[in-house]
Image 1 (cartoon, one colour):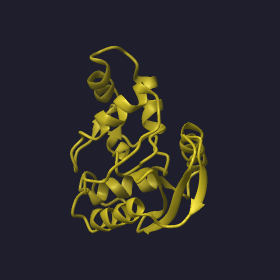
Image 2: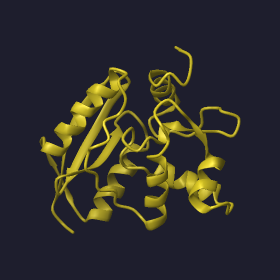
Image 3: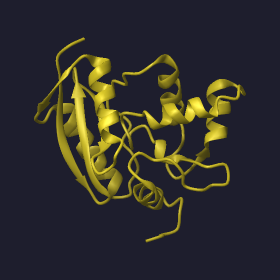
Image 4: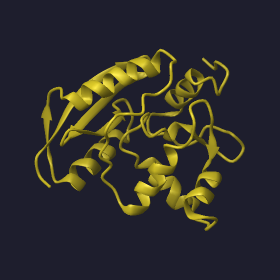
Length: 174
């Protein structure tokens, strides 16, 4: 593809996010304070064959405005054009994540059954969830362990708990 991913930062109550756009669409929203963010970033760059360019774009500005609304506890704006570079399987998982309603959670097993129609591929689904390049907008924080426990979030469990508290899924923990 080539071109540049235009990026800017967004400071949320739970930490800093890096927002990136490519060809007028949001392609990256990852937590900067986590050890996985470089994996998400490099995956997007690799799949798009693009370089980085600092600056704002209409797509990242719209994403920042949507995040303002989200962090005010008013839900998630859904009309953000996104580009999700990944495999067909990853995109199926990410599409399924987008159907988890605000304020609800599903287990990895439930998500797997939805995506695969019952085929046991929980690890593959969990891996795709972990590779989600647009955290918050494709709400991977709403996926929990079989027993409802908080497991596996690239932004860290503190951030995951904060997002679920904001959505009133969890009582205030901290």
